[in-house]
Image (cartoon, rainbow over all chains, first blue to last red; front, side, top):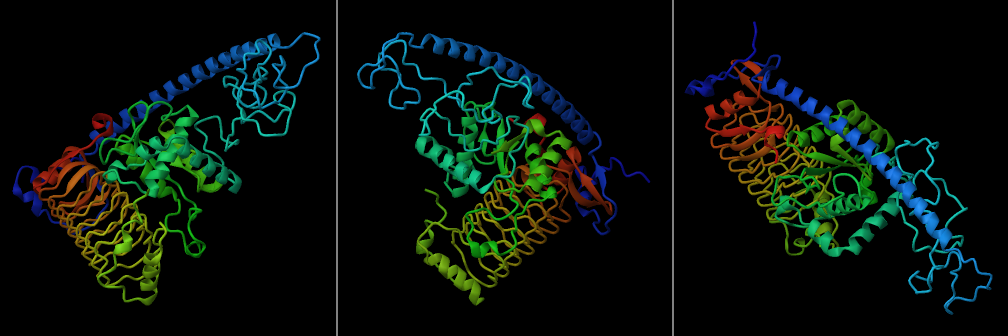
Amino acid sequence: MTTRRRRPTGGTSSSGSNTPETTTRRPTVVGFSFTGAAQAHVRTARQHVTRTRQAVDNAQTGTSNTARTYRDTEATNTENLGGIDTTTDVPTARGDQSTTTPSGSTGGDGNDGGGGSNNPPPSRTDQPANPPSTDSGGSGNEPPSRRDAPPSDDDGPDDDGPDENRDEDPLPRRPTDPREPHPELTPEERAALDRHLAQLEQDDPERFAELSKDPDHNGKVTKGSQDEARIAMDLHERGEGPFAGDYRRPDGPGQGDFIDSDGKAQDMKGAHSDWPPEVPEHVRERPFPNAYNEADFRETVEGQFDRGRDVVVDTRNANQNDIDEMRRIVEEEGWGGRITWYP
Amino acid sequence: MAESPGTRSDWAPANWPADAGTAKELRDWLAKADDSELYALDLDFTGADLSGGNFTEGWFSRSRLRNAVLRNVSFARAHCEGTDFSESDLSGVDFVKAFGRESHFWKTKLRGANFTSAEFNRADFAEADLTGANLSDVLLTRATFSNANLTDVVADKTVLRNTVLDSADVTGFSGTVIGPISVIFRGQRSLLDGADLEQWFAARGGKVTRFYADRDAT
């Protein structure tokens, strides 16, 4: 006996509400065959198109970035070569309108009007002095990354003191490929990231305060909403991904955690393998009730997709096994274009 | 400043939990001047009256709050995984963005409760009274509402995937939902979606529209 496309009688008469509800048998999908299957096909096809488009965009971006890096490097080298003091005069001490800035000096700002020879050498963390190499295992289309580059002592400042030009990256292991989640954080990385987030908050307290207001809760501020604000600010600082441009909290409740640069709703979901670090020791002795598992992860992500939202997956408190499993699920399901990994 | 702890200094339970350990935990937390959350996991609040309490971002996982009075309590962003609220009065409760998977609300009064953007997958609401509750943007995948009173409930993109609605009263239930819902239809367990889902609600006095992200998302 086929059970397809049964329609509730209650749609046309009052008898529908008196339908007997007694036995439980194998579930039958009613009214799902067309709308569900067809929509699923359409959705899948759109996801394929989106992923293909993103792949092309990534390739184009990578190529243009590489070209730009070469141009920038060439310009920097040319500038530096031109800035070499070729006179045979003995350099004088700083502060007397010297034409030569000692290498590694952090006292000058390069704008003292000395003219011509006071350009600082390029920072090894900001501007590569050498053309990018493609033999380090990375994509040939990608610009050189400070995360991939091994430490080098043959350029940049040669002192051991603090360098205000040095970019402090709290997570040097962060993958350059946005489809890759960060490996499980070490305690040192977590501490560095926490410091970085605190700094972001400190640098722009007004923006932080604005983003901390939770529209789902009449604009109330909680620790959770503040944490979301810090993550959003950090993602924005990366300069890539859905938070790279303008982003904001939604205007009202039930619209996701943020509206990203493309006007798309984004929801932030934390994946926890164990208690968050701030939980007191006596509590940590108990079983953690909110531990990651595959079913919850799938239900949560699919629930967001159902509502037309993309998801920021926060793995700061996840172990490597769980991160690997989430990554596998995302790849298998083709969710990559809709998932932003954090950190 | 996060709002979670600020209001607790002037509040005390109308009726303290009978369990001594639970009462001590609550008393110690109230005495603190810092902004720490209440860690009330695996505790027994049976019979207590905590009405008006602010437990925003608190942890109540696996705890028993049966036969308790919890009117207008804030459990916003609180952890209530596996928590048992059965036969309690939670009228006007605030569950905004709460985490309540596999929690129990059997015969619980949840009139006017606000569940906006919460997650209550696989929770049991059998015979609960949710009259006038706000279920906007809630994840209720595989939850059970058998014989529940869902009259005048407001929904907005509410995820009812495989949610059991056997004999639920959905008179005045309105808004947008995401299916398929699970009901006994002509004696057979069935998943209804699309127009059939809408008709199922309409036949019972509800007025819902099936939400499709590709079509309806802004």
